[in-house]
Image (tube, rainbow, N blue to C red; front, side, top):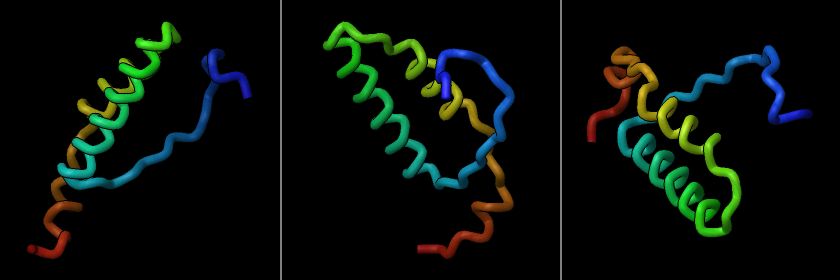
Length: 68
């Protein structure tokens, strides 16, 4: 699979709560920082972080979560 060529692919949707979203963003940011320190390409990580941060919130999903 060629990761650098834009091609039509199936979309995958995951459902996470706010804490899990923050963990994902932090992990991506740490990986981006590691790539930058090793002088490797990290542009794709920046765009992925933006996508995760801008993902829509499904209120119906959060209403179904058990209360702690």
